[in-house]
Length: 105
Image 1 (cartoon, rainbow, N blue to C red):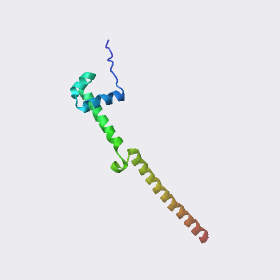
Image 2: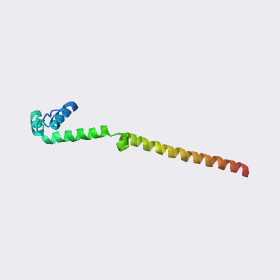
Image 3: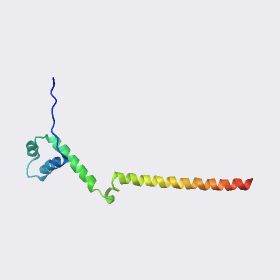
Image 4: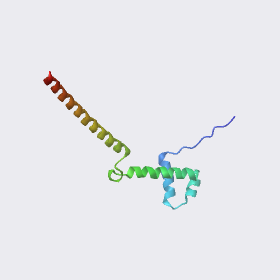
């Protein structure tokens, strides 16, 4: 029978502390990983995620046009405005056609 390996889990705060310990530079990444008994590849994955999340959090509307949600919201508002203009044109065309048909009979 095979035994199921139990993996440790780290909270996001613990992961951030481990990554920051490696980034401080007072100890090597290898020493930090040995102390916490994690693989260096896992440390670098956490570091990359932390840094990427920081870039996203620090992005301002001037830097990148805002968050992805803001960009999507802007695009949806633009589409709604286009559809409202098209609806207005069609409504006007129907009114004009109705007037012409009344005058014609």
